[in-house]
Image 1 (tube, rainbow, N blue to C red):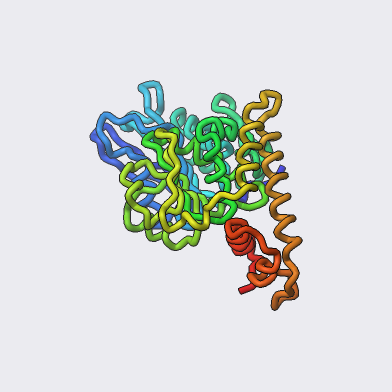
Image 2 (spheres, rainbow, N blue to C red):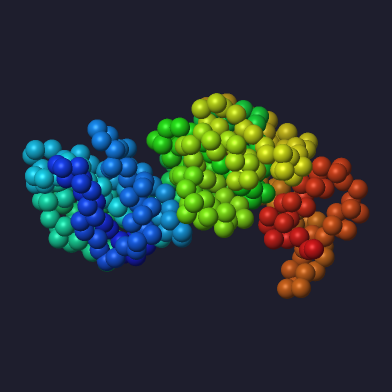
Amino acid sequence: MAPLTDLLSCSIIEKDSNGDILWTWSYPIVSESQKTVVARKCNLEVEHNSPQVFVFSRHKYDWFYIHCSEVFDSDKLPKVKQFALILFAKDFNPRKYEVLSRVLSKMYCKTGKPTEILQLYLSVFTKGSCSTQENGTFVSDDFNSHCFITNTNIREMIKTFELETILIYTALLLKKRIIVYHHSLEQLLKWIGIFPALMKHRKVTDNLFPWIDLIDDELAELKGQSYYIAGCRNSSISSRTDLFDLLVNIPAREITVASHAKESLTMTKTHKEIALFMIQLSENQSYIETQIISEINDKTQDLLNQLKSLAVVQGPDGRKMVSAQSLKEKNLPPAVENFLINLAIAENLFLL
C-alpha cells in the first residue's frame, strides 16, 4: 500500500455555542494566506446557516478540501455547534479526500480529540490507509489518480448544450480561458469536474479553479494563468469579459464567446463533424461514461496526428514544428488554417 505523501496538512475550525469561530488545531502547519482563503470558503460565519457538507478548491498550487459537520448532543464536543475539517493536498481527487475527511470528521465527533485525528492522519501519510472500529476505513489505493473521471457525466453535458458542446471542446483544446457559472455551489462543483475528462491527453487539472470568488487575491491568482477553467457562482461574472474567452452558463444552458475570442473559435467542417459525433455518442445508451470519454479522446488524437503530419520544419531543439509558411502552401480554407495555427500554438508545435 503506497503512503499518501500528497497530503500536506490537516486542520480543524470550530464554531462554538456563542457563534465565535476559532482555528483550533492544525498539523503540521497552515500559512496565513491558506487560512484566509479557507475561512472565506467554509462559510461558518453565517448565522442559521448549514454549509454544504463537502467543498473543494485550490490555493496557488495546492488543493484544499473542506468537510463541514453539525455537532449533536451525543458528540464529545459540548461547546461546539459546527466544525470544518480541512485537508490541503498536492493532488486533485475530490472523491478520495471526501472519504478521508468524512472518516476523520466522524472520529472527531466521537472523541473530541485532535490527537485521534493526528494518529489517523499520520497512518494515512505513512501507510496510505487508516481504519477505525465505528467510523469507517480509508485506503488511498482505492482511488487512483483518474478516479474522478468515472464520476463525471459527459453525456449530461452534451445533452445540455447539444451542438454547442463543440465550443467547450474547442476552447479546452486551444487552451482558452473558460468560466463556468452556476448559482448553486453543489451544482458548480459537480459540473466543473466534467471538463478535464474532455481532454484526456492533457493534465487539465493543473489549470482548474473549481470555485473562485470575485475577490482581489483570487482574481490575481487567476490572471496569472494564460488559460484556465474556473467556476464562479456570482452572476456578475457574465459582464467580466476581461476574465474569459468562453462563458458557460449552466442554469441558462447558454455558451457565450467573448468578442475578442470569436476569430480563434470560428467553427470549421471538422468542428461540425465532431459536434455531430458527440451528439451520436450521447444518444447511444449502450455506451458508458468511460467509453464516451475514450471515443472523444480518439477523435482528439486524430486531430493531433493530422497536426503532426503538417509539422515539417525543424525547430531549434530539433523537433518537427508547424510554420505559417508550410500551412499557407497547403491552400487550406482560412478558418481551417487559423484553427491549425491556434492548435499548434496550444500544443507547443508552432514555429514563430
